[in-house]
Image (cartoon, rainbow, N blue to C red; front, side):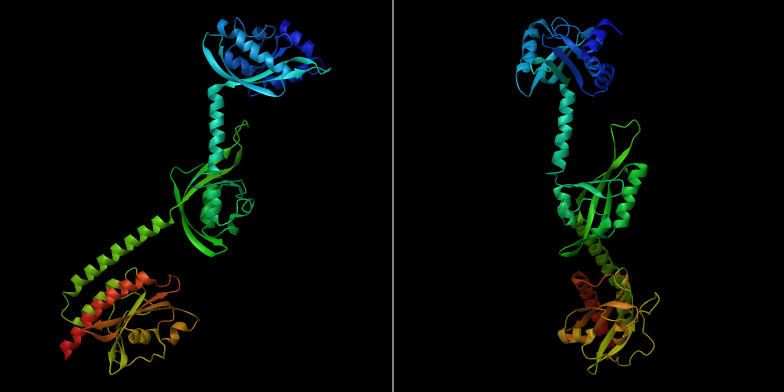
Length: 437
């Protein structure tokens, strides 16, 4: 051990080696001065920043003549030592000189040291390069902004996939307060789609973040009821910077709600497809010599992606008579079924009868296991849409579209499409009646 190190150890007394090891292991540069301004401590981080070793630094009187320009030496020494008689810490920025002659701007935090008798005994000074300090401050500011003011959701999830930090935007998206979400399993918040979300989180823990953003459809449980949302999500695996080997701390999950945009895109795609189907059906029906065959062609094109089953009942003698239908229980073309021409036994209040009475569309969904059978429909039917057939100011019948239980109920846009199909079917049916007459 050099003379300077020996003197420092002697001054420190018992435990000098332990203190020296602690000082050398610090991430911040640290030096200390006695009451006369002589350097007593100098750790490895200080050596890394300025290039001067502890053997070269300890024992020197201040920074003058080696670690600071002569023009600045007096001001630097005065400001550093002034803290010895002042309460608390003081922050300064100095331009120091490296051993290789280069200059480096450092930010210092210094405070006075008191002896056993309470008298001023010296000063300790922790310092770091200004750009490193600014980087740290930027990181802290970024973290605070993400968790307070970000316009997208940010959630930190631990290795057990439980939220540990949730920003305000994410809390609103999840329909709960920031504190109430902490530590809760994701399955308590997400009714549907939790398997996909947890699968993505497990993948990030095991393999790292995916290269591309992921869009997840989830159904949330909120006080107002269930809500279906689409979240464009990005994931980051978090590891401790203090461990020798990467130790997973959890996952950073960032997301934004793109539900409205996705629904608009889906609706636009659906509208384009349905418009194309109407156009194709019109071209195909124009080649049919039999008007009823043309009506069946319109229904064949309409069923694609829209419904599982379709049937047409015509008004004859004040009653509805089955004319054409798609086969029940199996895919196939719309055709004249066996027993066609026989009046159907619809009970009062039947959706088809309601459509005729209202001269409009009627939507209905199953309310019991026997709902479809009671209405003379295939047993698997769970949702119905009846559209009246009108031509030349007369009601000529009704077309019924049916969906099974694994498909959603018909909505208003579906009724608009069904009415467009019904107008074309009604024209063909009316033409068939006129030709037959």
